[in-house]
Length: 402
View 1: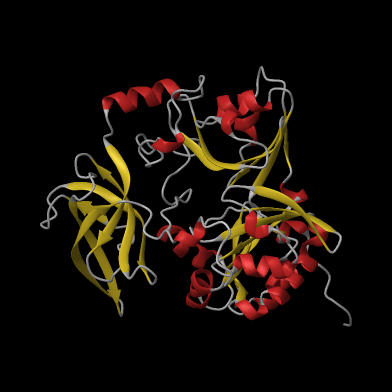
View 2: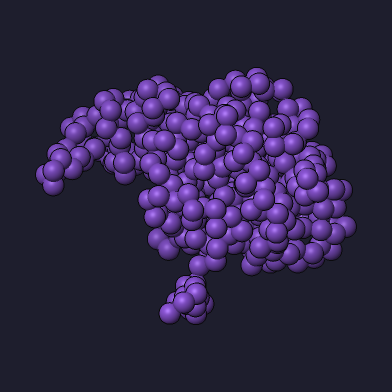
């Protein structure tokens, strides 16, 4: 048989490929792909260690295309979003981005995401999971149009200390003047794209938003521009390490959407997740406001906090106890990591009051598999402030030219 094999029918290959997939397949040495929002994405290209140290010491490319994107337009767009999310959208100026969360009437978190203000009555919302049903139900009574535009926008995250230098060499003139959570439009070699100074690594970084037909040429030009600055593609495993160091939360890892929980008491509120700074009680009414006010006044029974764990064994999924004897359970670890940059054994954990106070000590019940033999360790863990890693370069404007 000559020529390429015919493509399998769609029902045998249900995951979509992003516009960058051809390049990702070429560079993929580990053959590690995972699904994300209906797309096939890279878990790791070579090794997690190489990709992690690239994002902390050089620069990386990460395919953001599967991020679910919605366009929100109309005379009531601002008023609608201000009712939907807990943050005051009226303060968001055109050309700026804001991290937001939205809740149900009980104050339980449905999801988090970013809102891009493209104009007076024109917004884009990016989320990890599809939210069209909730968004549409919340829009009743508002003069607003909501449209999913995920497939119309290809996106790349360019993250790391040399990312600004790479983007300047790529052709984004003036990118160094872009402030955190600011966006601007550029044209490079006839290709229009938008750059925002946003990211999920807690480091200096940017995200590029472009038409799908320009994706491969942008990827190729970026790789050439970043050759002298150590630019390499990064998969989701290395990104997960970086986001834990930054203290960022991951859906279905650190919290489960209230739309998906089945068991009672599995929902979480923004206040319980340490996201109280995203809740503006001074703005007009928003969904979940009354319930969150009651919780604030009553006090929190539990809180998601950062932990410094003794030793060097990550406390993956560890139960937490009030004492070393393990007599009373007071919480559990949601994310854990031995941080190569911080040289600390860190974790995110949900802990009951009063043990979640900063400086408190709890005990992590850690299980280790040593050549198919399980060993148990009780390790002291101290409640600390997040983030664990917050370099000055992430906010410096202009960044140092590295």
